[in-house]
Amino acid sequence: EIILTQSPATLSLSPGERVTLSCRASQSVSTYLAWYQQKPGQAPRLLIYDASNRAAGIPARFSGSGSGTDFTLTISSLEPEDFAIYYCQQRGNWPPWTFGQGTKVEIK
Amino acid sequence: EVQLVESGGALVQPGGSLRLSCAASGFSVSNYSFNWVRQAPGKGPEWISYITSGSRTTYYSDSVKGRFTISRDDAANSLYLQMDSLRAEDTSVYYCARDPGHTGGHFVRAGMDVWGQGTTVTVSS
Image (tube, rainbow over all chains, first blue to last red; front, side, top):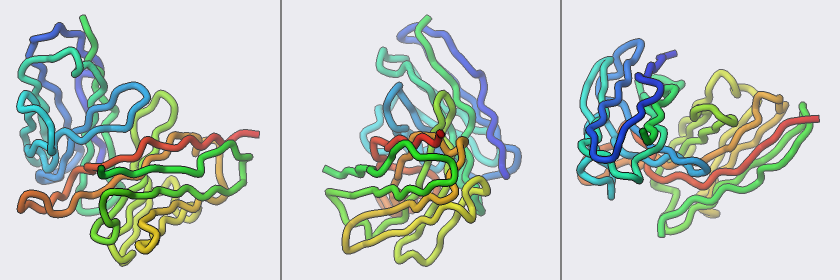
């Protein structure tokens, strides 16, 4: 099973700040990694697919990069609606297709 | 509007069974693969099952293999999860989620683009 480790666990930031979230895989997943945003009481929302492609309707301030074992989600300038938990998920060659434990972005 | 709506969640005793349904609207399920993902209270999501179009391939996580069965009925535009031998640790919100397949000329390998609102399963005596 591929383990995804997200860091940091929590970020305390102010609106307008730049955010960089990390997701590290225990073995290579090529570019088969997605990022999701989840708010309380809601389902996860797809932000980035295949490491670097923004999903439909996702603002340009969200970007993803990386390949192999190291991936990054960047929010160029935090908006009030961006305070949430962010999860990465890998889709390697074989299941289980695991999620990371999440990074909470909270208001400072 | 493209939408998935889960139903069937309930309070059930350990060892019991439950069948979850996921009804799609705004698109035909026949062209897509689907997943079930669950989320225990205060925890992150956990992928548990997958089914391809035409039901050619199904996958399960080790935590549910042999107890849960994923299926689909394209005529009913729906997806199902039969859950048997339920345990306390199966207590979660259960989501169905769509694999987008081809989008914008790109085949999406990682990313589930449409999710339901979830249905709650509680396993307790």
